[in-house]
Image (tube, rainbow, N blue to C red; front, side, top):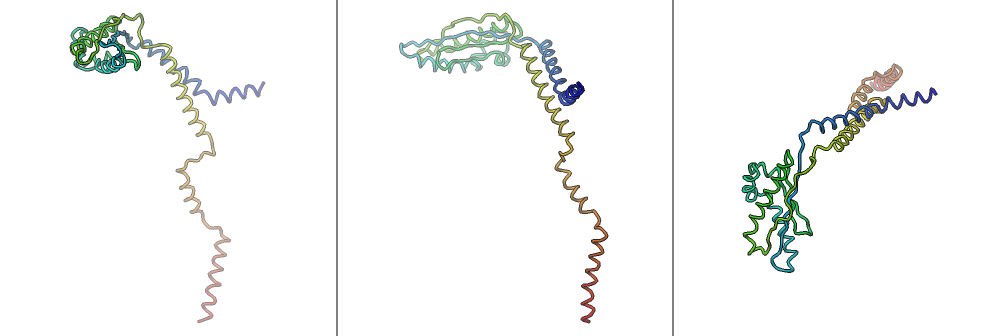
Length: 231
């Protein structure tokens, strides 16, 4: 029983930084999810229709091109007036996404309320159609609204489960770093490299023992005797 208690104490002494940091990190993530402002997202869809049969690949290419243009000022400027935002604000709230094998453009709008997100997505989708269709005789494709944006039921962020998981993971990392630092500090064999030079200097400064000094003195006297005899 005493060995079990000793093992438990050793584990607690070693792992307490992790055991403390993980719950604190999870609690911080839950707190962030509680106080963060919600963000809603709504999607509108536009399909690119070829005007000539058998030009499906051409429609896919134009869908990718127009998907990139969905965030440009020439499309956002007329959509800004309809959505109640400035062009710069709308550029941060809306973006277009395309598929490599389907002639479809997904316009995603975000906002602090469900209706605001849907309004932003619909405004950009309509502005994109109005911008692209006058060029149909040259491009050979036409943009057609496929589905209007619907107001979402729940926000996309914050996510309580995700924020708690991220906070717990951050606490685990911090606790592991603290534990490793404590282990290195408690290890007597771990001597920092910067202390090697002072140790060497102290070793050189150690005085020579008396017998060694006396031996050197006898050697000097014996070397001096032959010199005196030659004189």
